[in-house]
Image 1 (cartoon, rainbow, N blue to C red):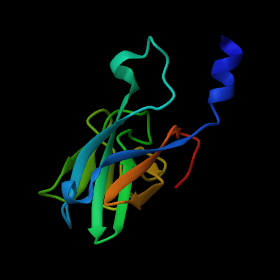
Image 2: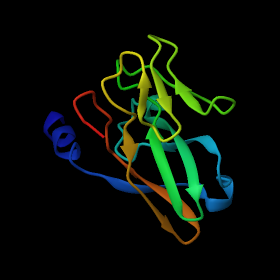
Image 3: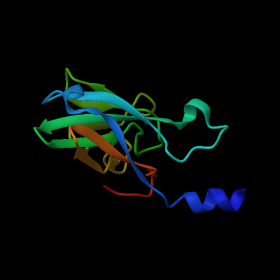
Length: 133
């Protein structure tokens, strides 16, 4: 069983986040998708939240919810146009770049594509502290 899990680590899949109309122009919204490479015991931990920012008609950014410092979930504050981490004070600009605090880089950004009026994210990617934007 362990060898089967190791083989799956390199796999990725395109997963729909929703129709384009779910993501209004100029807004950042929370979305989620189900990790396509789950095991029966994963339960709700296989649900992966992400932040979706629609910059223009076909131009998006999809960010991991995890702070680049130690992985705490960041929150979006539309009033200030900032993502903020409640754990150690990490702050990110609306484009995901590092603004202040201990994070060594910006938020992890998922690959995305648009297909048949839906926004898809490349699932199976794991945001790690060692990856740079």
